[in-house]
Amino acid sequence: MDLLSLRNQIDAIDNQLLRLLNERMNVVKNVGELKKHEKSVIYRPEREKSIIDRLTVLSQDDKGTLNHSAIEAIFLEIFAVSRNLELPEKVAFLGPEGSYTHQAAENRFGAMSEYIPLKTIKSVFDNVETERVRFGVVPIENNQEGTVAETIDQLCYRDVKIVAELPLSISFSLASNHDDLTKIKKIYSKDIAFRQCRNFIEDYFDEDIRLIQVSSTSRAAEMAANEEGAAAICSHIAAKLFQLPIRYNNIEDSQDNTTRFLIIAKDFINQTSGKDKTSILAKIGNHPGDLANFLEEFRQRDINLTKIESRPAKMKDIFNYWFVIDFDGHYKDDKVQDVMRVYKDTITFLGSYVKMV
Image (cartoon, rainbow, N blue to C red; front, side):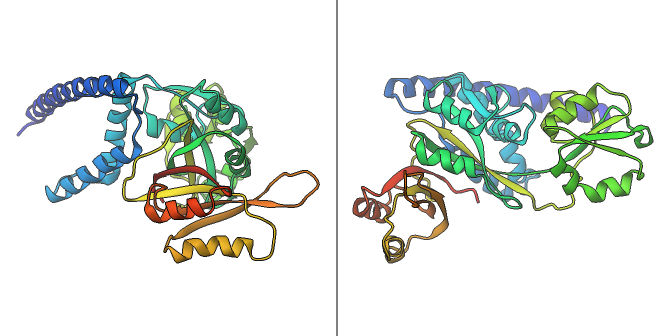
């Protein structure tokens, strides 16, 4: 079979895909009308995960080429287009454009959503709480650098809920208008990117290469796109944003650098998926045994705690701490409800969402 015949086969399959996608979107419109009538929410992370898991098993059973990651990438974009047909979404994120938070947001909400970059995590919470945007995306922790304290603090004091968590592998790219590396005389990036890509820089460039620190990897891509003899170490989305060709991907020294992001919204509660995580704020007393007694309630009910972090209560003239706690399960689970009832004046519910990590 020659190349032209194979291309004709691909064209015919693409035509079928388009017809099926249009058919899917027509069903989506009907679903959207029903949801508007019932005043139910459009975004259902637990439903999307269930579809992706089911299709992954189907692909494996059929010995298909597509694995879980490929199926997820394709169908998250389909889901995002579907949601925007039902109700256009505004999504705020910690900027600037081209940041890893931007990449996390676009991974989840697709290319059609309206994205609003903001300068601070507080601003993202402000916009979500006042409902100027439907969703916000903020970093919560990095497995190399630890917890993002500002996000934890905002969760403690804001009237928002956690909708979903999103782990993102932090991968750096070398992007430049020059495909000949000998023509690159300077590289722009953040100091942390230079540290995490030290081996690549030493292997591919001479000692006289200039490493210039800038405020963000997005800014690095912008500058390299407009200067001769320049390159940037940046995210994939930053290179795409400034139309800067990527010369090398995955140039970081460690492949284990992952940041966990949170999607937040106002007045949002997910349905039970069977594989959930719940986050709460516990305002526990400061007397001997108060914390131990509180945690014992979880042990007795066989609820697995996955994380506990203390934060200053910021109460006047007293040193006291509150606790942000993650555990396995959904807040509607009977045993979780038991704890909620016992400590109804102590616990603030922050969200139940599909467990991704």
